[in-house]
Image 1: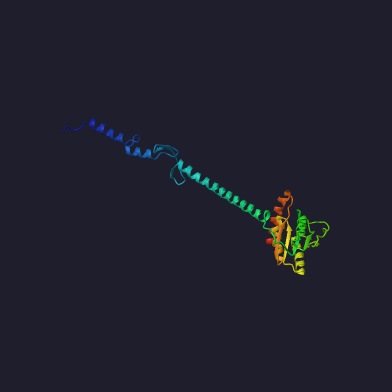
Image 2: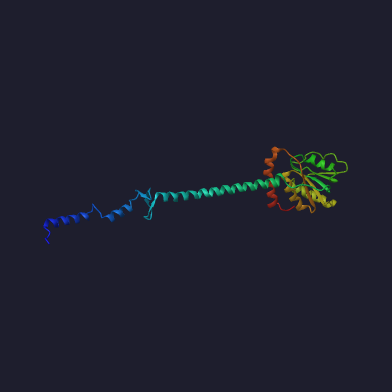
Length: 250
């Protein structure tokens, strides 16, 4: 077999050098370089163009994954705001229902006859309502409070067959009225009384009178001006809270 000449050896060495030269990499190396694009480059994944970037720990993630993480972080405050709105709406519903039940439409009613009718001081047409009950013969005694924001005038003419008592409570509030009426009840042996008041005061009046008077306490409400409702609701809640948590005695 003939030997290769110097020219053939030179050409073989040149081909080998070109195959491993820095300018040309083997097919496997070129494939690995394409699989790891530089940071911030755009490459194709499953037919989609996805931009990548380096994270703090050196890992390379796609921009879509980063956007998904950021979206989850933004949804967390929105979730808390949504729950806060639901909680506030629930509180508003509870407050409205409680106001309707306690101050606007309280339970009231009385039997056909009681021992005394007690008109409490306050706004509204209380005196006409109390006189109407007395004329109906619901009780033989009518007690009228002339306390703060009360009737303010002289005792009305007596109703036939009904004893009328007017008084100024000390202190001039519901508690003072309850103390005076309870003292009358003990002297006269009363076992039931009918309070004439307004709707925002009804529950509070029953609570306070119930602490002082051992008998049955009923309520009949008198109408008052619609323009006075906002103030009466606000005052009614404050006075009721005071009666429940602060002034718990008779």
